[in-house]
Image 1 (tube, each protein chain N blue to C red):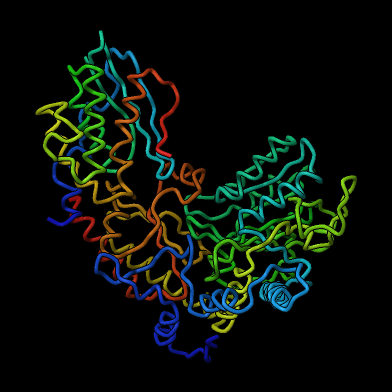
Image 2: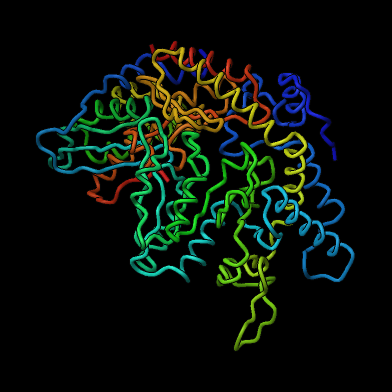
Length: 416
Length: 157
């Protein structure tokens, strides 16, 4: 696996090297160099991740936790080492607090179904925010249908800032759980999660953070946050799709019933009674994404070698640059200009629908996301059907943003 | 002409900016709503049908240049057509925006719609953009549902 050498002071130099680690970024589309500005949807993969997944299949692949043979032992060890790697990456107290899932969506569904289904009762309240991705809305609506909980929604202002005081007013003695994004996928807003967790805990409510975006853009320490549940995906973290993580405090996980039943989550099964495995195995029914664990482990090695703080600094520079360049365009309106943001810019152009912009940018080789970003309530909040979203990864540079701005000029040429 | 210019021709941009027959006509006998959940585009088609002939047509909605232009241009060719003719035009239109041999003489598409249909061929550039075909066909699917008196919302997905 290619280790990353020490990070230089020269950002442009670093980014050029990081970029070279991602083979897909050398591709051409419509005979133009690819400008990839959609990492918030899914990030590209460094060679080390691709190699790790291949290594698993070429040298060590077998089902885990089952065989007594050499291969199964190797893949089991690697799978469990990946768990330890994740533990270190988010500073969990124990690797038993790391549950592998398909991704953020499954992690949130797991909490809603298992914790929500067993601990919450009709009339109990949970609080979401207006920033949420559908993945942190719909599982709670399913729970509401099942047991009759109340869902309250914490508002945001015109800039997309999370309104902490308004949130505080929603906390009541019946609030049992607060499920909030740690970084908005559509606007980039980073809510004041320290305050949210402190206020929620003071009222006896647990907190789940949807970390799908945040875990990619800066260091996360679940113990320092004192967060109860934290969910994220491998594929936005430069790892494979199909594997993600639910962190949960051990005493909470221990009290939760299984989410799905099957193999690998049991101690013993008879037709009369099944004894469930301890955590985290209890929540990992069936054969998991084994090669995905190899890839996720390599992805964590990769970003850790660069340093999450270095990635965060680089992306903040890109965000400032992109914000300034886009604001030079008269007919462009940024949607989401919160004080604290991750590397995401959402915008609309006067008189041009986001889909038309997306198609024209695509022909210039530029990949952006257009539409509602799986956050329709948020779009409604701004009375729009969608935006154009450019999101930055560690491999993006100012030239990518210049290309975006130039291509928006081409859009104007066609539509004016 | 580049594929983009072919797609975004003046006529299409014009219909996209100033759609014709936008709004609800006075005498509506059937209407239907269409929705593309991928992009959030919506369209409502209003029809006045008498004895199997479309007497009047209008639409409302919001969407991209392609979907609005397609809806607008569709409303311009429906008046005076029979339900049967319109069904055949829809097939021909679908062929136009999805299949390369739309112009094949005597092919599957046939000659339904005559000169009126020729006006729609400006939308044939869409076939180079498979992700956008649903933008162009949403209004047509929704209009078909209105003709059939189907109250289920039409969805592209």
